[in-house]
Length: 304
Image 1 (tube, rainbow, N blue to C red):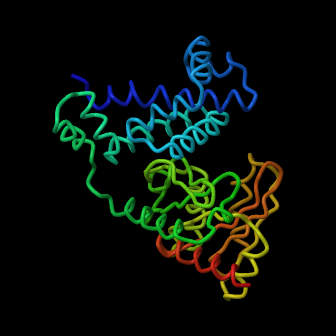
Image 2 (spheres, rainbow, N blue to C red):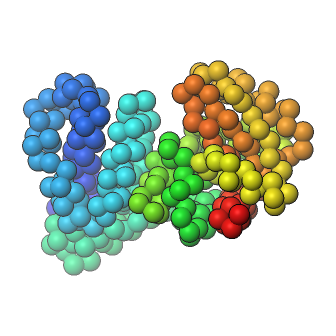
Image 3 (cartoon, rainbow, N blue to C red):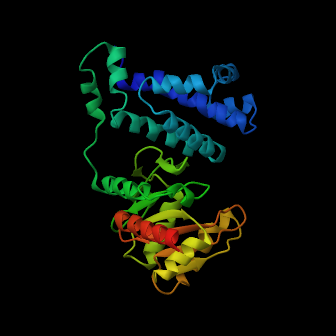
């Protein structure tokens, strides 16, 4: 008898960990450093490298996890791991929960247990549909429907973050834990929206809410002149902020810049700074509103 959690730990997590190890190795990390970051032995890292990416992906595909999603998950965790081990571990945990709650391993779980209705056990992980999580998911559908959307995603990835009414902290916000990344000509959201899913963008919308309480949602787009021209041509209020000194002082300076904006902006033009990619942040009264404004600006830019 094998529980769903045992199934994940045996058939999913090791393969994802292996993909992360390969990603880090290709980025120049030594085997000993990778072993330290992942909390496994160096011989295990060598085993992952010898297995190769294709074998690990085939094993994940065999239990229902899409190859492209698996690669995107590994890339996201590798990126987070190079920044913060706790952020990487959080992302992995949320991905594992997402796999359980989306019912994508059902057929494989039946094969392993030998019980025809074993998927009934998985239903204990299905949570009641949270309206805020559902709203962010609907906003993602709008964003992903935009033609050529991959061209408008920042290099660091995008996200859709929604704050609950009267939100006071990051845990009162919902976002994708692994960000939204480019995937060929389309996009892919890593994991399901979760509370506290995006610390960086959550902090931005919380700061914005202190000044303009009507805005509770934010979406990140790649900064380019065409999008700015599009926003201006639509008479959408744009506020430019920056440049920032460095990542460490970003949030100290952010509030000061926002307070100088004057009229409530629909678009925050973040010009970036050393170690900070320039980004356009679209604000909305809710997640659906923000995604519709983003879609309007993007589609209008394609006509200019």
